[in-house]
Image 1 (spheres, one colour):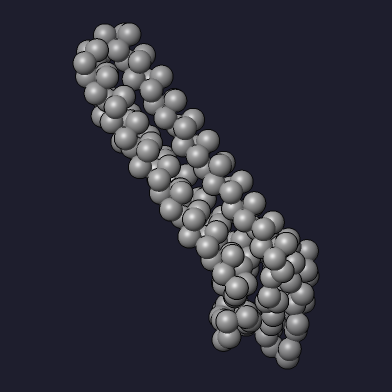
Image 2 (cartoon, helix red, strand yellow):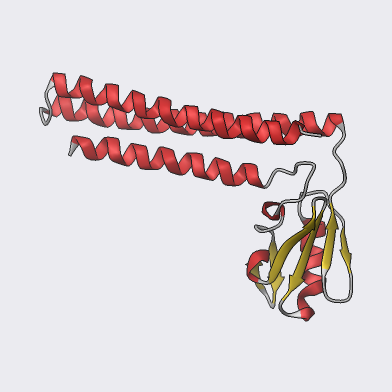
Amino acid sequence: MSNDVITSADHKMARAVEVMERDLGSIRTGRASTGLVERIHVDYYGTQTPLNQLAGISIPEPHQIVIQPWDRSVLGAIERAITKSDIGLTPNVDSNVVRLNIPALTEERRHDLVRQVHKRMEEARVEIRNLRRDAADHLKKLEKDGDIGTDESHKLLDTLQKTTDRHIAEVERVGAAKEQEVLEV
């Protein structure tokens, strides 16, 4: 039962890192990435549908994203959804595709994006620490109730701290890689 607390905390911490990684994927860098537009929701016959379920998304050039909808009637809705989104790109509609040209980032914009990366990293670290605190409280309650001994409690708390450290290091690694990608000219 006490090992379940550690396993559960480990799983939740891993999910926090995955969510952060997915969020960082939507931060724009100087080159094209399908992650910029995949999660944009398009009004498709009254239903908010993710763009990647309505169209094929490809990157023919390093600074261009091409979105080819499977249903041509949704081109206008895709254009409106991209314009409303916060990615800061203007869609160009050709006959049956939407093209997004990714301009080079200015130095100021790169530093703003790095701040966003650091903010998201800190949110992930706080989430991981909160999960650690909740698991530690649960272990201390088990010790207080007499379900586990003091020695086992200290050993499990040490294991919990090592798990936390491992996930925080993963946050740092992923964040540093994204920061490097944003600063790359």
